[in-house]
Image (cartoon, rainbow, N blue to C red; front, side, top):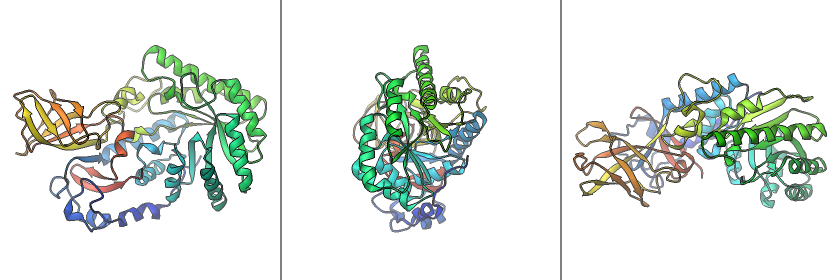
Length: 435
């Protein structure tokens, strides 16, 4: 199926924004210039006045990850609707779509509005939309753009009734597509059993303003580790999704016009999801298997280095070169109060810390030399400082710079509005985020 599209002109117009004090890390010499004007000078992060801390994205690595995921999905026969909440960066959305992404996934109505401001043509909203104002806005958006394809989750009869009540008042020209979400014990949202999911499907079938087009789920809420028990729990949950699809199809509650969308797949177990969703289906119509992994675009040095199928052994054949970490952060040594301690200009306002702290990787000394920091680690983060434990004879001095790897991109991007995209030390672009 064809990839979704975006409004390229709106994305390109981001380069007309002027750089100023709003964007941390940017050179003061760039203040007043548009992004396009600044980039024409081919700025370099080592020479053009950038200040720390500074989040960086590596363009060759991003492109490698984009190509790797696109190739793997094509080989497995699954479509990709990456979760845009990871980056909330339309420039990166555009690259994902250019690599063949079938849709973009959003988590909230506010995220959806960002997507639509940049013309994303196909969106999955991975939650039940029961916000009255949000539903009214959605109805108008669907009426205004016949080319806009949308689907969201439903997980309760009460939710279906609320959506129906609001949308019926709006009298939309076409029904809103929904997918029944199957959850699980101790999970997040989603019907807790297959039987409950079927009852939700019955409620949708009776709604004059909703259309049932598939079944959805999120296996990452079921397991959080790689033990045999965790992997088995994921398989059991995916079997439940398959049973839900079959049961709903047997009673004829899917929309008659099209295929059945079946979607799951975070960034940790998408190998198992692909295996489950592409196994043969004994149904009277085709199934469209869709993954929603989002963090693959940057990968990381922590959570997904461990959890991603392309960071570990996985079940299905994959590319020879797995994902690589595409983001890193630079921070300066601001103080050496004790022989075994260095304070960095890096804190909770700058980097993720919900999974693991930043990982010191390379020392960039003031004399121009570099060396790996194999014996140093960040033990604590304050709002604006990182406490880095170092060997007493490390030679690390005030004014040196430290390059750190990061864990969990979802909670790093939201701390930055403008991020340099680099090739080596040259700035190729400045990536704008909208959180």
